[in-house]
Length: 252
Picture 1 (cartoon, rainbow, N blue to C red):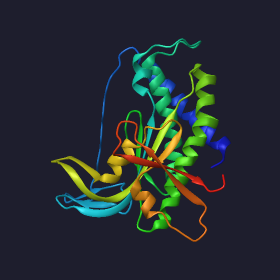
Picture 2 (spheres, one colour):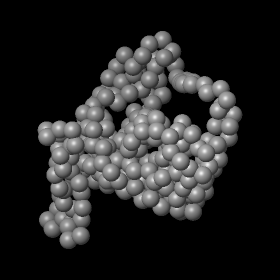
Picture 3 (cartoon, helix red, strand yellow):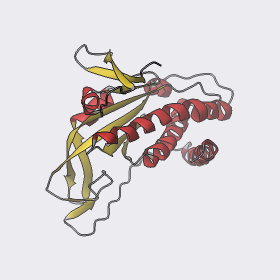
Picture 4 (cartoon, rainbow, N blue to C red):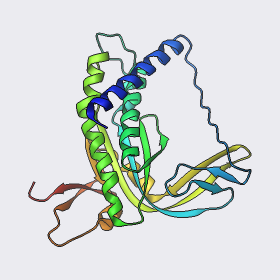
């Protein structure tokens, strides 16, 4: 998908968000409707890569790379009023920001063979199957594309349409095995991947317009003589124990 098409898609989603906002702004309603239809009572459909159907009451194990994108300071955006020429409120601001971010997330994650399994309010969680170490390249590419699209498309659109300041995002990538299962009971059943990679990706999404990798990905990364990729250690801001890594090409 070209940048012009991506921009067009983001605009379409923002226009949809504007329409929704106009419909509900007088009487804000919070609804969360989840509908799952199973092929039979024993199985639940799943979007988790490699596990299209999950049998209730059973657990599977998969190898995954988790990607968490976080809009930095989103709580502040909701709580602190700002001056803007369009009169956008705090909640309205966050609604438009997350709409734009989630749109580019869906485009880039799907394009690179991953799946967004959760929208988190201030970002999203995406999961990639990682059976072979060459599988690291797709989530890396998706993360890099998200950074670029926020800079080149999302921030200019938010400024142009709503006079909003630039967004800053952090992206965490982590690798591990995870349990894949169904949680809940009766008709409230939710496919879920539970593993260290998801926890660590969330922790490492605290950078400012940067991607942080966990040690699992560093060790999983394919190596070759004279390779052009290097990792640099970077402490997690809230802990001297949790260490992430930035990645760059050698010799610039």
